[in-house]
Image (cartoon, rainbow, N blue to C red; front, side, top):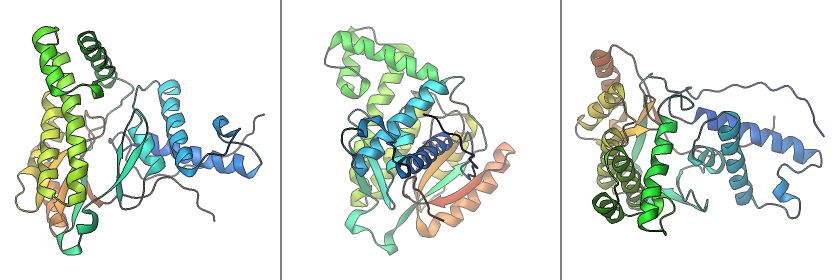
Length: 306
């Protein structure tokens, strides 16, 4: 059975900026369709025909289907992170997501130790350099990671994806299994980034901003040099933030790369000064205006009754 409906879409997420505009549209549309189907006696997801889904299961199912929509209908070989946080986001919490099991943990910035006098915030800066993940280098990175994984699997069959590998595995494959050049760079980035992600979650909960900042800076260096998804304008923004001085802990590219935005961890009382500095210096260095705003973790997509 099919049905026809009119849909008006309004959004303020910058397009092509690395801030998950496509995922936000997909997940918001899914929530809308869920409400229609559920209110008319239908079932939004076939997996719920035998037993109702819990709210957590529904968020996971929604994210998976939205990812498949982008993979199949848009031809973008994206992962599931964007769709997942748009579906399962929680106000005031970051998500540590296992992309294999889809299990996740909510992470508080500062945990129980957070206080208004010692609070840090995230500043997003849009370079206004557009990217398109459907064309260009992003699909190439996906293929290269698969090729690197194949080499590691031949050396150690227990390694089925790069998340199974350690830096020791990567080094061993470089020495004896022919992992070299660009494939070595890609594997080194992914494996080290996974390690940084887990360490960052732990440091965030402790309110250890210095450690979080160092991990963010190392992440950008890895994305720039090993994964090669940064660009001149993004590097300018990151360098400006990292050298701003007291108040800034770390800065890095966010999103799929090749333009888009940076995310900077900064003391709350230094955020506005940083924003003005980035706007002035970025335009002076590149001739392009950037857009900055302070942000915080918010809830995922939800229906609003009018």
